[in-house]
Length: 133
Image (cartoon, rainbow, N blue to C red; front, top):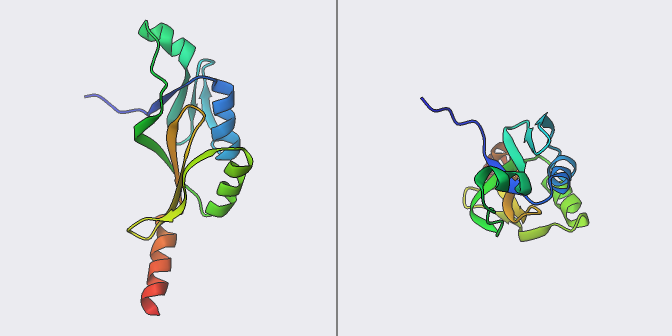
């Protein structure tokens, strides 16, 4: 049997990326191995220079549009303000999804898509309130 452990994002500057996820998104480091770190929630960042040595060639660090990291917060507007103040590049403003949930998507410092949404229960409550009107 093979057990899935976590997604690993290759990043150009580990400390800047750590700041993005830890400071702007409030993620806590679970393990720090120097060239790679694991956050609670089980996703990892790996320094590109070290990853390149493991692969034997340079990884393509172009923007990635085939996957995203997904986070939830009950304070979506506050997170958006923090990201804007830090100069984050947004893919779109807060948008309501077809199922009622509000989300925003930004690029991290290496072009990975990060989605931040309100908890689904908040969207369900809002839908129920609208249905009652």
